[in-house]
Amino acid sequence: MRRCAPAPVSPSDDIALKLLLIRVILPTVLLHFAFSGCRVNLSLTALGLHASPFTVGAIASMLAMLPMTFAVSAGRIIDRIGPRKPMLLGASMELCGLVLGYAMPTLEMLFVVSTLAGSGFMLYHIAINHATGALGAPGDRMKNFSMLALGFSTANFLGPAVTGFAIDLIGNRNTFLMLACSAATSLLLIITIGVRVATEPHDAAAAGKRRIADLFRIPGLCRVFMVSAVLSMAWDMFTFLVPIFGTQIGLSASQIGLILGTFGSAIFTVRVLLPLVAQRIGQWRMLNIAMTATGAMLLVFPFFKTLPVLMLIAFLLGIGLGGAQPMIMSLVMTHAPAGRGGEAVGVRTLLLNGSQTGIPLLFGALGAAFGMAPVFWAMALALLGGGYFLHKPVENAP
Image (cartoon, rainbow, N blue to C red; front, side, top):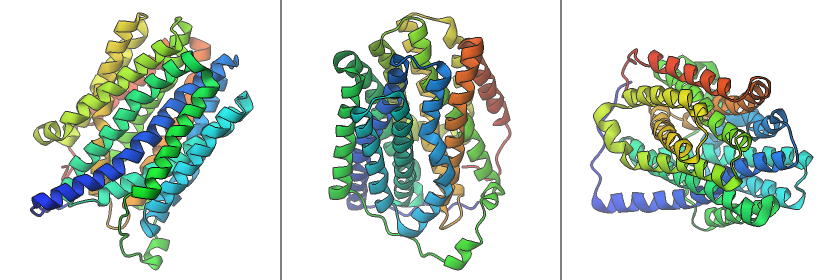
C-alpha cells in the first residue's frame, strides 16, 4: 500500500482538530466508564446471587453474543449514513440496560442487561472509531487514535476502581444506577456537542457486491484482524477471570476493583507515550513486543495471591495490552479500502465479539473444571505463539 506524506497543518487547523477530538473523547469516557463498570458489576452481582463460574461466563458472553451477529452490518450502515445516529442509538441502548439492572437485579435480568449494554456499546464503538479515523489527514490517525485510546484507558481505570468501591459502599443495585447516570450524561453530550463527520460518496451497486472475504485477502489487514483477535481474547480473559480469581482467594470487591483499576492506569500511561514510541520502533514491532510481554505476565499471574504483587502484574499487563489497540485501529484504517473503513472496523469488532462470546463460556467451564491457573497458562501460550508469528515481516507495513 502506497503511503503519501501528510499535508502541512496550520496552528489554527491543529487547534480545531484538538477541539473536535475533545467532543469525541468526553462522551466516550463517560459511556465507557459505565460499560467497564457494568462488566465488573455484572460478574460480582451474579456471584452474589450464588451463580456458578459457568453462569457468570454465560452472562459475560452476552455482552458480545448479539453484537457479534450485526457488527459488520453496523459498519456498512455507518459507512453509508455516518456515525452520529449510531452513536446516539448505542448510548441509548446501554443506558436502558443499566436502568434495568437497577430496576430488576435478578439473575435472569442480568442476561438482558448484558445484551443491551454490550450491543449498545458495540454500536457506539464502531461509530466513534469511524469518526476518529475520518478526522484530520491520514498522517494524523496514529495521534488521533492515541488520544481516543487515552479516553478509553481513563474509563478503564476509573470504571472498575470506582465500581468496586461503590459496590462495597452502596451495593450492586445502586451501583447500576450510578453507572446509568454516567451513560445518561454521555448521551446528553452526544446530543449537544457530539461531533459530526461527513460521509463518503456511497455507490449502492458496488456496496451490494462487497464481501467480507475481500478484506481478508488484503495481507496487512488480515494480519491486523488476527492479532487483534488474540489480544482481545487476552484482555477479555483477564477482566473476566480477575473477579472470579479474586473472590476465590478472598479479595474484597474494592480490592478486585483496584487490580482492574491498576490495569487501566497502565493502559493510560502507555498511551500517553505511544505515538512517540511507535514512530521510533514501528507499529508492527510494537505489537510483537505487546504480545510477548503480555504472554509472560499471564504465565506468572496465578502464582501470586497478595494484592500488591497482583496489582504490579496487572500494571505490566496493562502496558502490554494498552499499547496495542491504538496501533491496531490505525493499521485497520490504513489498510482498509476507500469507503470501507466502517466495514473493516465492523469485521474487527465481529472477531472481538466472537472472542468475548466464546472466551467467558470456554474459560468459565475450564475454570470450573480445572481451576484458574491452567486458563491463564493457555492464554499465555497463545500470546507467545502470536508474538513469534509477528516476527515475520509484513509487506509495506507502516
